[in-house]
Length: 257
Image (tube, rainbow, N blue to C red):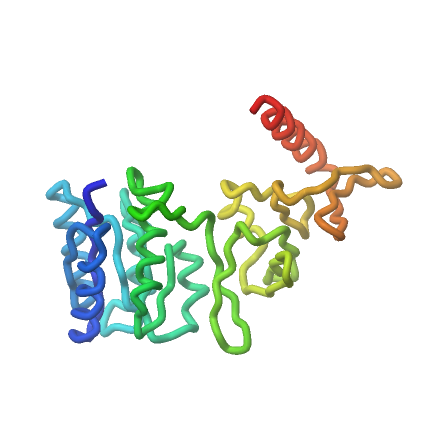
């Protein structure tokens, strides 16, 4: 790839210039444009699209005068070729909005260069024809999606690759990893749709599992169960055949390789 075309959007000029400076310092960035508000950003994106040079990523503040970043981010998802969105904000409480918009990353101000580099790697991996497998230094690009979780007032990001299974709890979902669990304000159905390509499958109305973490599938007293580590998870009848067929295909593929 020749370098990403990106747009930085912030209504505070010093913050905008600092962000643009950090972006231009990264060799994976080819062109940086700047906008002071959401309306100007939309005009610049439309013009770039009309000129055949669409912007590939938008680094976007949230609390701005006029059109705020969350609303602008939702508008960008309606584009025929939507740019990747990275939120850059001083506020933690919009992390769930970022997840719903499917933002590539969520950076807190003041932006640390290493976190910005991580966000750029995520964008490069997501953009068609991007670096994909890694950056110039040969490091692997981050794999999978991330979801924000609140821990003692601090927003952390849990990678889908670390999640072994998900349990529905009303309008919330509990993510289970090898080291603990995290309750997030996202319905299980939303995670099922978003993480399908990452190897997650619905096995029960209350459970979503990462297929790669399934250790065993067995029948106990007429009920189908899967075992993930020390946890047994029920599989409903309507999902049993689909899951069994999927595991068989994976096993055959593994033997073939």
